[in-house]
Length: 254
Image 1 (cartoon, rainbow, N blue to C red):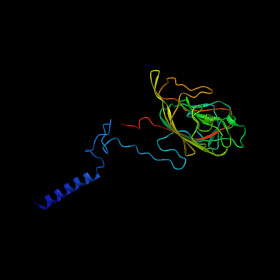
Image 2: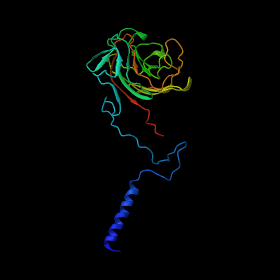
Image 3: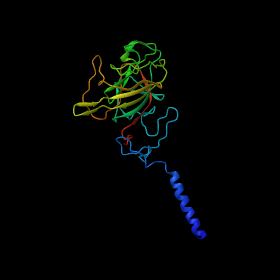
Image 4: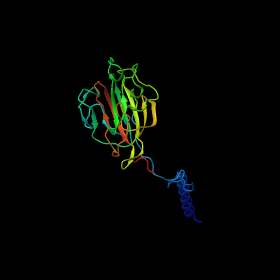
């Protein structure tokens, strides 16, 4: 064997060895149950995104309010100043865009000094699909009915704990919401939700028993797969900032 042939052979072998070494998936493992993919096998790679620094949204989020631009909303308009918008007696506001399964982040602050009591103190709410409410209320040293307090699924499920900060301080909701599914008029999957209030889990995969009602048992009526996000006007000057959403449809690529 000539020196040139030997060099080429070793180079090719080295290249092949490098290729095998760089391969990170398996093709000789069993299929996952009910799946076309193998354990540790080749499958679609997760999209690379950039997480936000501090309170900034991640790179794949849809920003609904950045402190100044309210073009994503209809209704109101609410007062906008100093990086927040404030309920001002002009009605609820609703996103122009509709969403289905989603991750939603928002921050709110209740008025200080606190006035009123029970449902009359810091009352608002965030409605997913315009149907399913997570209550906003000032429940810092303020008692009300449990399924109407801060972070309750209004009229249905109290939060696991009261994680409220004092009035005037900024608070956060991080919400993972899964839409209900209907076949015609028949409900085949309940809406469900996970909520973190100020970083504390207060609901985990909790099912809604129906669309939010006041003083009535919630029920479902068939509706589309998407709907708007609504922030409620309830007569109290709640402030909101840093609102963004990540639609989750399309990420589950089985």
